Image 1 (cartoon, rainbow, N blue to C red):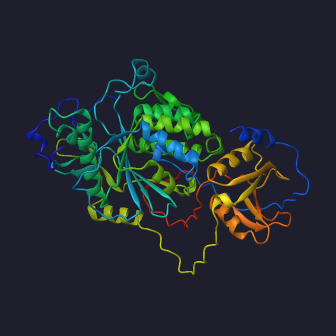
Image 2 (tube, rainbow, N blue to C red):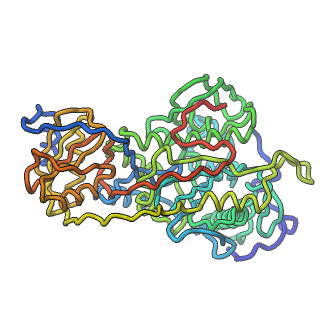
Amino acid sequence: MSSKNPGPPADRPLPARLDPRAGRPGSSRAASRAEAVDAPEAEGRGRQRHTGRAARAARVVAGVLSVVLLAGSGWGWYLGQVAEATVNRTNAIPDSGNEGNGGAAAMNLLLVGNDSRAALSDDQLAELNAGADSGTNTDTMILVHLPADGSRASFVSFPRDSYVQIPGYGWDKLNAAYAYGYADTPDDAAEADRRAGGAQLLVQTISGMTGLQIDHYAEVDLLGFFNLSSVVGGVEVNLCEPVDDSQWSGAVFPAGVQTISGADALEFVRQRHGLPRGDFDRIVRQQVFIAGVLRKMLSDDVLLDLGKQRELVEAASQSLTIDQGLDLFDLSEQMQSVTAGSIEFQTIPYVGDDEDDQGRYILRLEDEDVLHDFFAELSAEPEAPAVETPAAPETVAPSAVTVDVYNGSGTPGLAAQAATALEAGGFTVGSTGNADSTDYAQTVVRHAAGDEAAAATLAAAVPGAVVEVGEDATSGTVQLVLGSDFNGVGQAVTPAAPSAPVEGEDARTAADTTCIY
């Protein structure tokens, strides 16, 4: 793709199928442990119950396509290799026109929903009520900001009719940017190059309006929504009123809480007709769906099911196109302390509805200064607390630590799973069994006096675990009592205090399950 756009669209008309103005209608050892997990309680292991906040740390690949990886473990590395083997790559990040603020380790990722039906069979097209291929429409555009400390994630949606400056083309609707960049590539270019051209112009447009540098790009097609929602076993949504959009999207849902997947999920995120605020309520539906997927991924149903994790990785990566520089495993590590309550969804600040000089509906956004201030505040790194940081405890090599694992979570088989992950991380596992109680709220690392370094090493691999001296702990062996907050073996991250939310349109977190219209 050339580094410059040739000129306004009037000098080079778009093909009809790309013209945004045209519109469109409507091991054996591990096995023996698994059998021992639910064995009768061992005597002499008096356990004091401990309560504490549930630390639901997780590792997520990205936005709607975030896939839980057990960062730091052999299984997590394996899942990363599976994803890398199947994910599509594109040259989406331009060499110029993508300047702005951004921390050295913070990340701004542009998540795009592509309306292409190219990957769908005839049967799938009929099942999903997807209609004819609309070419290169990008009706879903979300900026995902991750701070350097990985303490939170901010999702900001951009309405497709936002009236913006598109480099080389002047003022137009935002969803025209990809189509212009696609058509601007040479006529004999490969399809992959044309799509890269569309992605690059969209990145330049978003960078200019936000004042941020876009570091990475991820694009999912319609089939991705279908597969992902099906693999997680459905996504829970809550509607304030029943809807019937059978004529357009095919969405027909009753009021109240319900679980949707497959074709129903796709109809849910595509509906805009018959909603009080049209495209704005469709954006809310997209945000609620993503939040539901993330909540499901942070649940024990996924975190403790290795087979489910692999299914998710495969389903996501096969429908995902990302830029050349995005490392999925690094991304999962950066997000390992994110919880549902620290994932926030908003819509870009706007003024209101309007028409352009051609009589088309557009959405007027706030002026450039207001938008830049909004995104600067959104991406501001939290200030470090002015307190003295205690020295980190001494640690030893994991291979020098012997761990006895006890299940106090109430989840059958959890001790065996934790033991397998600990061995993959280099630890030596002594025995496994049940704790004295099955309702531990907090995971505990217990040790004998003098084994502080070994306990610190284990605690560093179990996010959220508390460390204490145990009267019945044997010197040379550290005990790991699994609580209901246990979510895998990884790297310890202390979440930063949540920052004050940036006020935007329809701000809500992934933990919010109130009804929507």
